[in-house]
Image (cartoon, rainbow, N blue to C red; front, side, top):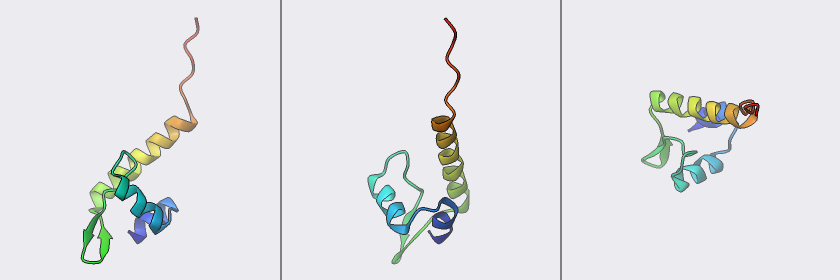
Length: 66
């Protein structure tokens, strides 16, 4: 979880809350003992999806001329 927090600049609390919500923004974390962990491949896929969602939000497609 430390690596995801560092790469996304989200706090541990924010990551835990997103995991609790279990929606499209949820990181692929699960409990292992007292900590939260993620597979590297799933973490990278999630980060790529977050990046794509952010780019789509900030760079909407041009409107189709009438």
